[in-house]
Length: 82
Image (cartoon, rainbow, N blue to C red; front, side, top):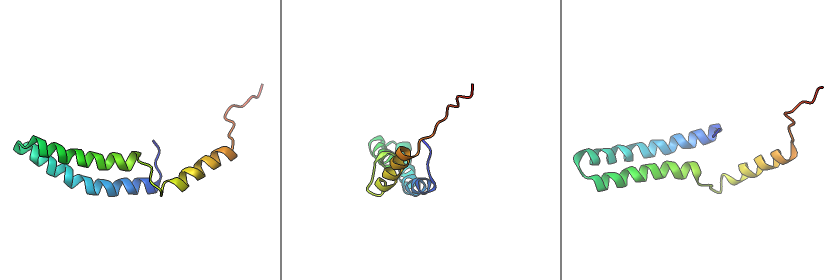
């Protein structure tokens, strides 16, 4: 999936939040507390998945513009030069 600069920065911000939670969960798993470790790892993974796949209200104008440009501008990739 191709990402723009704003999408990449958004992912980086979420990773900054999710990394300490994941490390904390990993520490719990290493200590033997599998349930709480799994919960923390799940929360960290959930943060990343929500950021990647959930459509937020701020994403809608970009999606509308992309579909509008795609409908207006038709590219013809095939060339028929016989």
